[in-house]
Length: 273
Image (cartoon, rainbow, N blue to C red; front, top):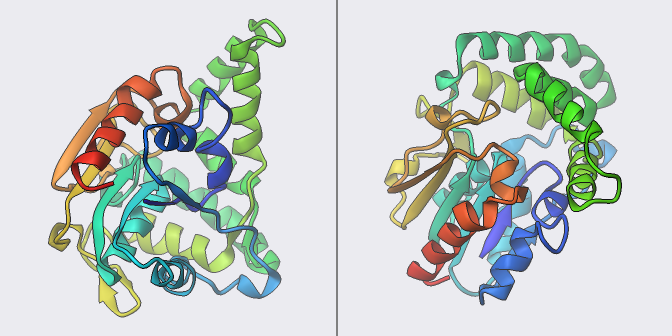
């Protein structure tokens, strides 16, 4: 299977021995390949989300001599659906992936629009969007949670498993590569603001991406407590699996193996993966 994720995927899916979805899948007999987009070069400023798919992901798939199962986390799931529209896939699974952007609460949509309007001039000059800009948006969606998690961190025993895990997640969240300017513009203006995906108007490489028309098995794993990607914003695929774990918790929390990882692994086996 191939696992694309746009924002710093290598770390969050493989943080450590006890919090590695990739290690877990391999130990259960699957053959997972992780897509790492790397850091954008200066001449990548015009590489939008569609370009990441047509110019980077699809050529990679062409070198695999068998149908693959695409598994995407967060925006990687959105992109996996687009890739499956271009190339035959054995199956597609999304985890905490946004699709129906009009399902976000109005106050969240307004906040994201304001943050992008403030950051856009600087990002345009830079040619990319630093991780700090993205993180400020995530924090603003649920500032109370940010305060609570750092308060809990203050009570952790230094060197404990919980302390080490917290630092690993924070390093991942704050040290990721930037987004290209064009990818961010498409994300915030065409998806968040215009909801081209949910409205059925998102085209990639000349094809309109319609998850409902995919001929292969598909699974949407959603969080009922996620503020970054609410369950209502996830794609409606042939199968759904809901969890009360949060956006990052579905991948790295102590409950993830029993509540998410095993369900994904079983589904992969059911569909030839």
